[in-house]
Length: 392
Image (cartoon, rainbow, N blue to C red; front, side, top):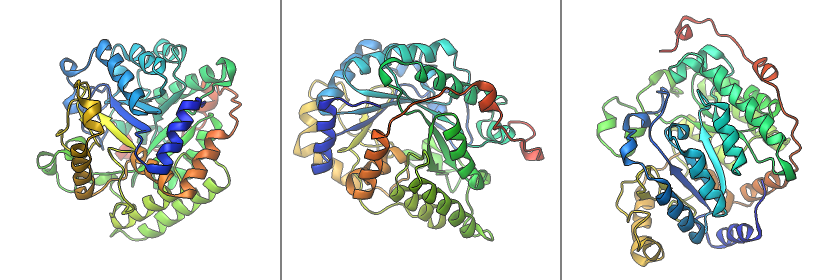
């Protein structure tokens, strides 16, 4: 992953003042081809509400002027958007470092190839288990494991073939739940074998099935008690500590874990207590989110009370005292979250440990040897438990 001089300058200014939005998330669509157990965003997919390419080009130019360095294009499933590759090219041409967040299921090889051709060097592909049946159960679609890992093998080959050493930083996104807690170290080993890093995100679920109609953020998660890490269960704290002690040790040994050590510690605490980090929130300063229709929010938990991102007065509004008052009120009253791209970005700019870990990881040479599909598939495990016999 290479950054230009101007991008390093933005990162430096963000570290000194935490007022440069170096990271942005654009949910290009809420449509999705999966109905994963912990996610409900697919219920709100609407093609008619999505921006066209001219509007996306305007968005890209505005993000560059605001100081964005890293843009993640997510969803839903971003490949559900028929012109994702063209949209990604607009952001690349504007000077942004683009990452595509995909489930990798049912994605034609030629579409991934086109993304790489237009300059995308970073992909995050979801994988929550090395057990085929268990992952298909989580995704609620048979064949999900094979297709996701097949996409990883393809990305591994394509990035190894890129010229100029621009091999990117592909990663696995793994949601930590009761179903995979003991698997996490092996998922790290798998990530290294396929030339990926891995980012762990503790699962967030509704405590009550009716919560989804009571507040804004709850629309996007679901009530799935089978995935919850039950803190009242026997030996659960020991299970959590054993796993996270191992992950933190592996991180220090140089294994490809994207999360900072402070984030891993915060994740351990959240799984054991349900409490979110209290170090502060930089939503709307270091990072922000844009919905498929172009609506700006400081993060996924807040309601849409700000100007539309494409409003002609948005940049003036962004720098105004009115915006900062609203942002502080939102951040100050939010109960918090464990969203890695949000919280870990704060840890990177708020702690020396997080900053230097990230800097070392970004600077480390990446000489990739492509992994073949049979080599990747060899890591598959089988769980014959009746619970996972079919994806439901």
